[in-house]
Length: 145
Image (cartoon, rainbow, N blue to C red; front, side):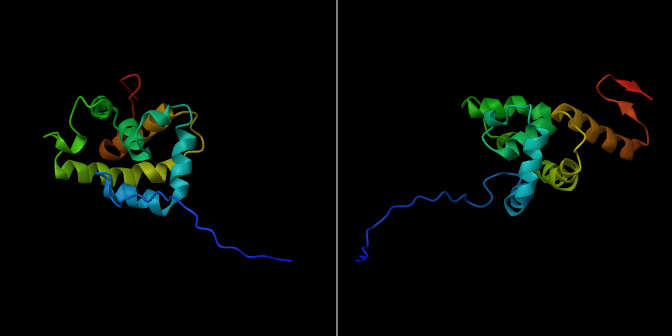
């Protein structure tokens, strides 16, 4: 004999509030297209991504390492969030956000040849420097060619 019964169940679901990052376009793109996150993890596989609060912090700080110190200072409750720094103007936030969406993420998708994040970042910055100046510079060694 088959019996049916009803029992209440409790389910917990994590829902991210939209636009929790100051880099809203980057966050929106990552939320819409999960293959970007897989590509970031592939290129950053030798980095300790887990030390960042989220993948956007990793992407930003590893692309612009000058901000890494301030990010970790905030994590330790010893400093303000990035958007609270006077130098992090709305225009600069927009620039970084657009840069990550227009340059970093597309480059990551086509970056199968990079062994590590540092190689990817160097190539990314080299390519942009060359586009802006027409000069190829070996950023890692400070030499021009």
